Image (cartoon, rainbow over the protein chains, first blue to last red):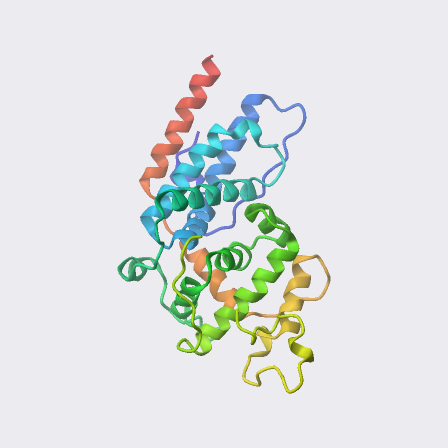
Length: 199
Length: 88
């Protein structure tokens, strides 16, 4: 296996999962599974960061999700969507952990300072920090949908699969999340949303 | 969510309720509908949504970060397990 530093593509979308030919040996399937999972590490880290808003916790989540994914690889159907599958594992682990510890996941200003980009996007004038603060105030179920679709670029169908709801629910949550973010950015004092709590 | 939410059913039919004039075109329901079409495979080009663009950039910024060494150890652990399974 190649070292992670060589196999993890930095700043690129995860490569599409290659369907395995029927005659592929089990070793080949497992090697490919491992390579595909390694290629997903950047996306998994970004998704986890959006979920828990903490760099260290996010990386712990990703590592645990990878271990769980590895252990459950026999249940993965080669050629299907590994990214959505891994996102689901990560998300389930995150919410399971949150329920167990009853932990509030709030934005830690110090960590946010280190981890979040605070530059205005030149093309639209929106400050990323404003968007991030708005995301922190959204209900978790809206924020995760926005992060999955707008951030990670998942389709409605993939997001529905990850979250475990219908596409109609995804669209509804997405629209509400977009509207709420816009409203918070436009008038942060008027919108009375509490900082995000994990349900 | 408040009753001001643009996507809320019935809001457009309420007398005297009009979309806020200051809302950028890219975040109007019709603009987001175009964005929706992209995801359902229709031909119309997606409208630019500054919020989505910002989120995409935030996501990519994290994805571009160097992967910590911890992950190398984890991958090495997988490789060891794989080799162990192969021997069996």
